[in-house]
Amino acid sequence: MSDVGLTVKVDGKLKADLERAASAEGIGLDEFVTRALASEMERRRVHDFFADRARQGSVERAREILGRAGTKPPRPGDGLPEGWTPGR
Image 1 (cartoon, helix red, strand yellow):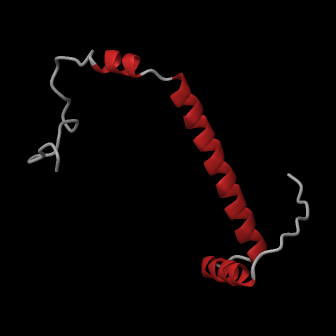
Image 2: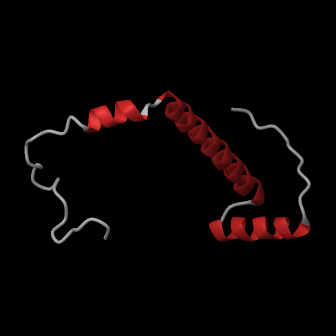
Image 3: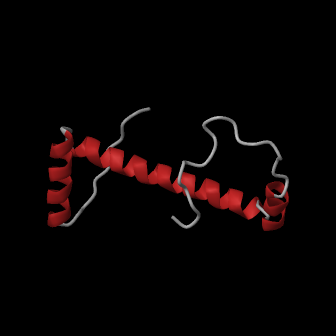
């Protein structure tokens, strides 16, 4: 990956907030902004992935799959916590 320059104009308060956050992380402003941008792009990719998967889904198919619940009891450690009740 090669670094390229990017100039961004931001409000003075936002710049101060970014500088404080970068300082709290112990990194420079450029690195902090780069990480924030990368994080937002990943969030968008994940959102798009799940939105695409949701478009492919079917409530009827999900109900069909859930209706195939087995008859065996849960394996040790897979049961509900002791004292658990619905709605709690």
